[in-house]
Image 1 (cartoon, one colour):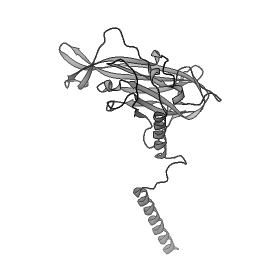
Image 2 (spheres, one colour):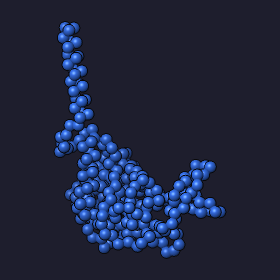
Image 3 (cartoon, one colour):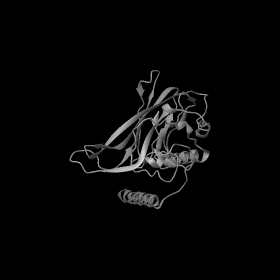
Image 4 (cartoon, one colour):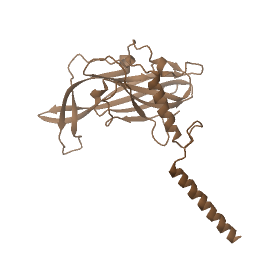
Length: 269
């Protein structure tokens, strides 16, 4: 199994306009797919999807998501090429809700798998009248099985019932509407604008199972995958047959060189 890659990364994000009820001021982050303890058929286009609810609150959090996949009978093996990183520091969360972050894996071998993700974020920390930026993180797991004859991967069907709760598949941050400016430090610490979080009790509860992926969002993700594969070294057969001006120049140059070499060969014969 390996992470699908092409001329550019297939790690992507999708801003999708949809109605999701969530408490104001609470950023809800979590794994939307795969669903834990489910069994899926093998596929070379297995989606891993995260969602941010109340995504606009993430603007100054500098979110970074790192993932890898464990496999084997005891889930002790790491899979080469399955690591992925989503750096959302420059993402635009303001126009759509929820905000999906995703990538695709090639999983054709049967057995148990476990998606492991670590998500980190920045926050303001005020100490002795000084503002510094610190980072915290949270780990999330989703264990699933791949088996021939099992259900085909279907993002729409998997998320259709949004009445379920799955608090262990995500985390929630109580983000205030306040920010601070951390000055340029003398050491390696980061500077700039940071978000002020409210750490008072009770801690908000996440529920990524509340998110639904409709057919338009699913099709957009797979379309982005197909576009990336078409730009790769081994494009699928159904890619558009378009020849760019640069490609035409390159082909013409090769033909010219071949003709010149042919002429030289003739003269030397």
